[in-house]
Each structure stands twice: as structure tokens, then as C-alpha cells.
Image 1 (spheres, rainbow, N blue to C red):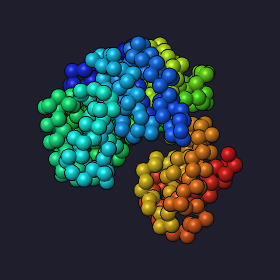
Image 2 (spheres, rainbow, N blue to C red):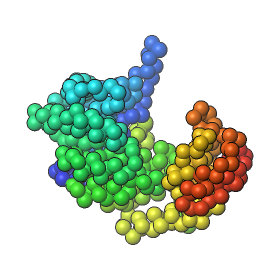
Image 3 (cartoon, rainbow, N blue to C red):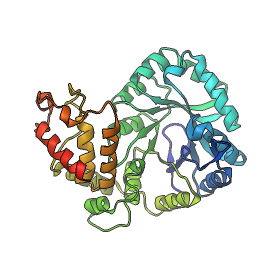
Image 4 (spheres, rainbow, N blue to C red):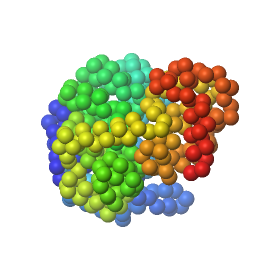
Length: 376
């Protein structure tokens, strides 16, 4: 296993981390519980193979993930880094929320301390109003002084530029967890900024939620060579970025653990030139697509509720990347949602075309794209 410096935390982190949100489960008495006969050996096997970062959360696996992680790693607790999270949003009504959640997690994990305690899935409103406004950060610092937390962190779901606001406003953040992969590079600049500022950086979704786990077409398009899978390519791209400390994988079997470790150890680390080559190749694929929508969202909101970037995104996965099954599912999901209007609601107002920086003939493209998606 290759280990990396984890920002300025003083920790060495395995380049592959274990995302404990998909541990194997079974049903007992109508309730889902962790299948400990499968999950506990799997977690220990990951440790034996060099994984030292385990990421869990209070609600993962029907609220059972923390208990499984704590039980599996009890005998090696001082040799691993455990990350968990404080739920935010409406349930956070006062700064005492942090200590209550922390104590619950400590009990479930059966440990005296959390290595990396994350403000969970925050956006700018949550950060401004709760973390800073309610002084949750002050409470986190007090818990850190007491030895209950070793490092303060955040996971993130908002526009990428908000990361800069968080780091500049709050100098106590020591690591962050964000989405990043070959298909979604929106956080790339902020990963570099966070790394520059001394934060450890962990990436979730390195294989794009499974989108890059199988298709051969994308690998061939990007490299010009045949491959059985794009799986390796996905890890190579993420870990080839020197601003990334660790890539999380939500593993479900011992075989998956061993495969991921093998992929990492056998070459999921590439030179900066190779990494730039992959990034450039992906950019070229987009550049020469029939429909060059960047997903900027300037065409929104449509007066009738047509989510134009979502429709074009599904088409791009089919037309550019060759991920037709994914595109089909995305289109089906779109059609099933009440807040996603069909193009039959279009009143031909032209708002979208006036705002489009790519000067696309959006209305005509929508008609063409929907015909393609309907045939998948």
C-alpha cells in the first residue's frame, strides 16, 4: 500500500480508503442489520492489506455502520484512522447538537476518540448559519481539547468555490471530503487550493458511483488501447492528481477489497504527464461531441421547469463516453421526477438560448436529444 502525507495533520494515510456506507447486510425480524460474518472479516482484511482510513457515519447501513466498524477494528484501534460525521441541517438546532452526536458516535464505535470528525455534507448556508453562527466550531474545538476529536473536518456538497470561503473563514478545518472523478472534475481547482492550505483531501466517488466500473468503450476512447474495464483508469486519474490524499471506495465483499488494493498497488499511481494526458483526452472527447454543453446551468431556471443540463448530461454520457446504460437510467430517472418537466411543456420562449454561453440552439437540440434518449 502506498501512503501519503495527509495535509498538515501529521498523519500518513493509505491512498485507498474504506467507505463504510455499503457494508453487507441481512434481514432479521423485518429489520436490516449488518451481516457481521461478512462485514467484520472484510474490514479486517482491508486493514491487513494496508488500508488505514475507514470512513463511516451515523446513518450509514440503517444506522449500523459505526457499530460494525468499531467492533471490527477494536483490536487495532491505535493503528487505524476512523472518520465519522455530525449530521447537519434541520436537526441541528443548537451548538449542543455537536456534543450529543459525538457522544453517540463514540458509544457506537466503542472508542474514546474520533480521528477525523466531519461536519457532514455542508453547503454555504449551513456553514455560515450553523458552524460559524451557532459556534459549532467552538464546540468542536472544545471537544478536541478534551481529546474526543483529533482532527476537525468537513464533507461538502455545494458549488466548488464555496470551499474557498470555508477554508478562508475557518482556519481550524484540517481535512475535507469531496466528490471527484474522471467524469466530474468540478472540485479539481479547490482540491489544489485545499492542498496548498495544508488540508488533507479525501475523494468520494472515484469510479463515479459505479459509472466507470465496467465500460470498455471509455478506456479505449481515452487511451487508444483495449482494456477489460475502465476501473483502473478511474483510480489512476484520481490518485494521479497529487492534490488528492486518499480515494474512498464503498466495498462490499472481501474480493472487492482485494481487487481494489491490487489495482492501487499495481499501478493506480501515474506521473503528472500521464495524468494530464488523461485529463486532456477527456476534454477532447467533450470538445468534439455533437452537443457541447458544459453543464454551466446558465439556461436555468426554465420558466416551465425543464432541467435542460440534466437532459443534456444524460445524452453526453451516451454520445461522448459510450455509457449508454447509464444514460438510459438517467433519462428514466428524470422522467420519473415530478419537478423535472418534459420538453412538451416548452413554450418556445427562447430564454435558454439567450443565456447559453455556448450559443447552442437549445430548443432544437432538446428535441433531437430526447429522440435519441427515447430509443436507448
